[in-house]
Image (tube, rainbow, N blue to C red; front, side, top):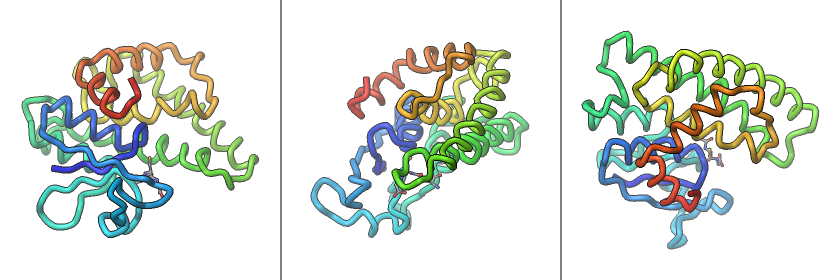
Length: 201
Ligand SMILES: N[C@@H](CCC(=O)N[C@@H](CS)C(=O)NCC(=O)O)C(=O)O
């Protein structure tokens, strides 16, 4: 399998899951500004939407959407516990968090990265994210990770997205459980490997 990624972007989530599950995933860096790979090949021919993550699974078009790519990878190694069994309540809980991270956090951050987003819009996004951080912080009071003591694909995605807070000058100091969560995830050997492979450690 090949994972098309950009260092530190949302593609870090499937990268972490791949390393946690010890899957032989090859990394292919993408220049998102130019929409090319290192050899100059056109990334739009891989993913017409031009975004990462994209996972070549050797069976048809690449798999996209971070919240789905992490599930595909986790399901290659069910014993990893990264995704609970299909049909179980536990799985719906993890999927609930994946959807939350995707829509309520990841996509609320996105306008902050765009140079042409008006400042007033950025202020609205910051306020909304602060509310969502408070919700996450409260949830993390119940355990090390989002659903308890087992690290799941949703934790990989949450960690990835919350890493952006510093660069966007979003203050997380009011959220001690988030700080504890970030430290716990960062200390995991597979996460260290993924960070190192992206030049982020
Ligand atoms: N809907 C996609 C969005 C992925 C996304 O926003 N990727 C960003 C990096 S975090 C990207 O590649 N942006 C470049 C672009 O959209 O041109 C998903 O959920 O995975």
